[in-house]
Amino acid sequence: PAEAGARRADRGAFSGRTSFIFAAIGSAVGLGNIWRFPAVAYENGGGAFILPYLVALLTAGIPLLFLDYAIGHRWRGSAPAAWRRFRRWTEFIGWWQVLIALVIALYYALILAWATNYMIFSLDQRWGDDPNAFFGQYTQALSGTDVHISFDVVPAVLVSMVVVWIATIVVMALGVQKGISASSVVFIPLLVIMFVILVIRALFLPGAIDGLEALFRPHWAALLSPGVWVAAYGQIFFSLSVAFGIMLTYSSYLKKRTDLTGSGLVVGFANSGFEILCGIGVFSALGFMAQAQGVQVSEVVSSGIGLAFIAFPAIISEAPAGALIGVLFFGSLVLAGFTSLISIVEVVIAAIQDKFGLSRISSTLWVCVPLAVVSTALFSTTMGMPLLDVLDKWVNEYGIVAAALVSTIVVTYVVRGLPTLRDHLDHRGTFPIGRWWLVCVGLIAPVVLGVSLVSSTISLVT
Ligand code: PHE
Image 1 (cartoon, rainbow, N blue to C red):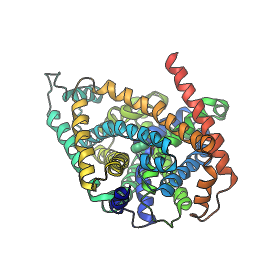
Image 2: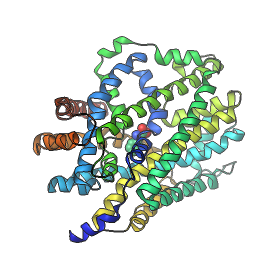
Image 3: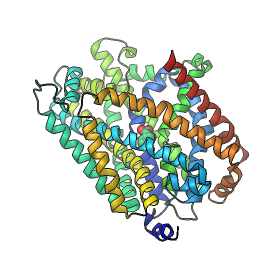
Image 4: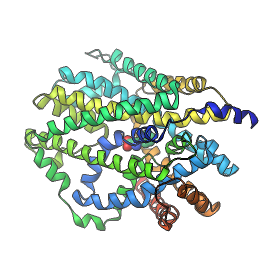
């Protein structure tokens, strides 16, 4: 490892705490905030969901974020390297995280390409009056099985896929500070500005109030249901990007003396703040759509791909100044998604760089070029859409939950490493880490993660 040591110098670094915080917020704020949180909150108690959500943030989200930071910062490496330095045999956890990162990158890039196209489609509402059929045709377009494509989407989707990957390669090749951090420093404030304008516009649409009422009306009885709590923890884990190896990798680029815990709090609350703003924006728009169609809000609630590529196009066509709403909405998806995509790709690039002692540029190319080719090729077949569903479900319900569960158990019970990590954090923050952290990481998180793993397995079988 003399060689690896020599190479470590060009791993890159954040210039300071602010750069790190922006990059971390960039990763956390993603598609999950915009298209996942609103429906999850609505379906799990509405206004009452805020309670389990905050409990999950404080008892698992932020504590696990600190765990990621502590491992990455103390053992200074990409996920596999840091885990390996922690204990030789725990390296596999890091490679598991790399595998998950690869899978996510494949389909995140595709969704970004769609959002880029749809941003342009919003200008003339190219989906016509049947956004559903249009989307079906559009996603089949690449496969070439549909001979009746009546619009120029084939080049459109390919072009945006190429644009997304070139942008990713450029940013990643520029490195940690000039690439990752600089793009988050520019894109995150821009995203906030765009989204705030979108929310204000949406709030003035007729019916917006009904949407908000549907989202925020509290169903207190929901708090008695364990499923609601599992959903809250699930949303927090995904939204904060904990246990993906991202925060671990990012914190390895921080200076030796730095405020880890204070930064973690900023990231956690900024992400949740933006998430609630997304709830307001999305439900105002859904309230408008319900009123326009003369139905209840409950009938138009959707999330994920359906919300973004079917419901929103309908809203955009219907609303006054729809093109503006479209550009702001899809533009926000692009910015939020891009800063998350680069964070997930970084997990892989850093791992390859550490493992083979490559330069930044060559590891970027070794990782991104095959990823770009595979993601374009995979989704160019009719398998694309079903595959996307399967991958997404696998990653979120099993892959990442298992990674988080195994890491908390290994660290707490097998290696008994929590006290060392706590000590590390205690010297790098504005406040001491209390015993509560040990309880959260060693007990609450593994129990909740175990329960979610079991419940998704049960729902798979039944
Ligand atoms: N945190 C991101 C979100 O809320 C999701 C994400 C997780 C993105 C992991 C990349 C990697 O959308």
